[in-house]
Image (cartoon, rainbow, N blue to C red; front, top):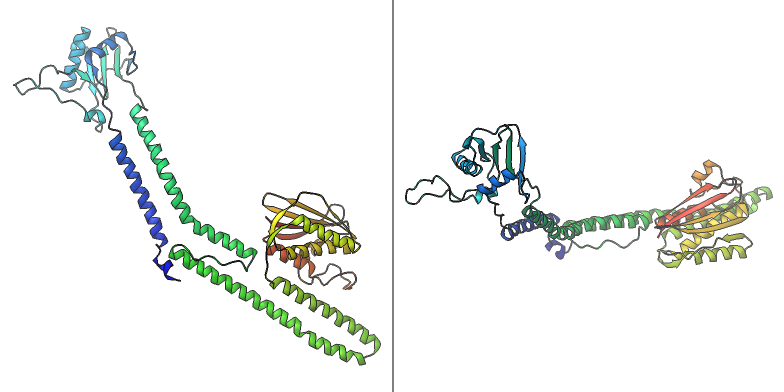
Amino acid sequence: MNDPFRRSWPLFLHIFAVMLGTVLLVQLLNFAAFIIMPPPKPVLYTTSRIAAIAQAGSDPTGLLTVRLTTTPPAAESELPDKALAALIASDLALPIASVVVVRDHHGPPTIADVFRPPTPRSAGAGRPSARPIDDALFGDFAVTIRQPNGVWRVVQPTERRFSSWRLRFVLWFVIAILGVAPFAWAMSRRIAKPIAMFSAAADRLGRDPRAAPLALTGPPEIAEAAATFNQMQERLNRYVEDRTTLIAAVAHDLRTPLMRLSLRLEKAPDDIRLAGEEDIREMSERIGAAMAFVREMTRHVSRQRLDLRSLAESVASDASDRGGSVTLLPGPAIAMEADAPALKALLANLVENAVLYAGTAQIELRRGRNVVTIEVSDSGPGMVAEDLARAFEPFFRAERSRSRDTGGTGLGLASVRAVARAHGGDAALENRPGSGLLARVTLPL
């Protein structure tokens, strides 16, 4: 790990800074709301206005609500409330006992309590005057007036859940959310980016073990994890290369004893010599096919932009020139990133198998949203279910005669699946309804 990574901030400090910065920003917005939007001033209701509304039975402005009830009000009230009740009773020409003014003194202080005007004092005496100068009610209150029929008329402020001041505060809350959201989104994406990078690298490693290593950038934890991931990829490649080299060496070294066997068989009787030469020839072909398979799987893959339909047309044309009946169904061009020689060998193997066992082959290319599907079908006898499950195993042959004229070495379909998986896709076989075999290869775009 080089020094630039050591000097960068650790990931936990990034997360701590994001959380701290978000909290500070929210607090700044709240402080701005406190400065910009002062608390609302309470609405004052004079006793004469309350008396007039009580007589009319309704408030044209909608600020006060008038209702009738048979439940008498609470008998306990404080002196200022009794003084205001006396003023309202005087305006209505009613006995003082017929009017009760009740305020909410028992709940928590409200904005109205903050702006509650002090009780005026009489000049020089230092005692409250008999009647307040500002004979008004505000905040939460209820004025209850007894009617001659015994029913009580209640006048109280209309409950407004969404006053203009509350709506402004809700609007400020929405503005604060919109202001914080882009900052939180950007920082969250920055923190989550390394996780997405590792996910993409793991997927790329599964498709191509020789993919380029991860860049060692970011916080120290991310850089160290990327370096460990690159070391793991290097060890996997070495492991595969060592095993592949061992197989190639064994296959190469088998040629020498086979050559000695063929020389010794020259002095054997004709029937033994002919049978032995046939076995040696088959073993030599298998060894050659195995070495070619190993070379194909270990060669450096160079992917390029290509047209899959043009590639399929080339394979179909070559097979037709050799006497096979091959048809490519029409369709649009399909552009993709792939290894052209490997895909051409994949198509050639599938077409060759179809022509060999059924005499005909039909190629169909379909493009989906994120994948392209290659289907090669024939009208032959198909395969039994047990053979379908093992068809892609190396050296497996569904044709049991072991004749070189009716079957290959058993590495064609193994190579098809290896190429498909090297591109991030897969290959499968299935019997067609009626008769015939369908080989399907899916490749990501």
